[in-house]
Image 1 (tube, chains in turn purple, yellow):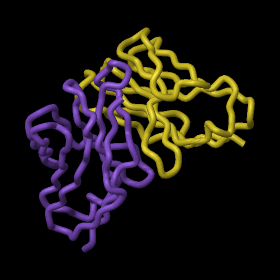
Image 2 (cartoon, helix red, strand yellow; image 1 turned 135 degrees about the horizontal axis):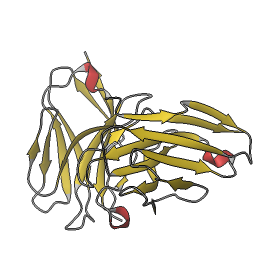
Image 3 (cartoon, chains in turn green, red; image 1 turned 120 degrees about the vertical axis):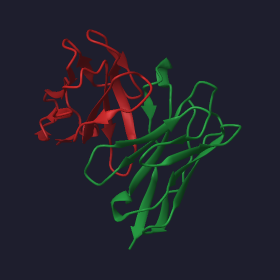
Length: 112
Length: 112
């Protein structure tokens, strides 16, 4: 199963954009790219997902490289509430696209 | 709507004891999942279900059993608890395989 690589931690200033990178060089043609985030002592929260094209929603944007070997989650204006662990995930474990395999994620700190 | 609820929130077991964790969702979702999260790690998929009456193994199924007798409930059983099963357990559900998974608040299990 394809895996992802993310930096362990990143820092951002409040109200500035944040670009969270993810490498997935062994991604297959049918693997979707998902992003979830987890605040301390809470369950993960869905952020965004995509297959090939860039995606936007009210929370964030997902930029996917043309060769799909990397992607970037973009938070347009970081707030203190965005401080969390962000997971870049490929789905498809066991043949089901719903099966998410989490890595260790990137811990995002936001400074006021 | 309550979303995804998990019972109990905390539990302490002695080695060899058994217990059942209950996950309930009121969103009429077809797909349900059980994950475990060890300290400092991402979530790992234990078992999943793609509909009422179906279950399948995930990434780390050994030592666990599951049942999905009703669409809204997904039970996770530990027949003979071991200290290695000390973890936080998260349940999730989704309407279809691709897309947002809704996570419960988690159950913190300690096996002594």
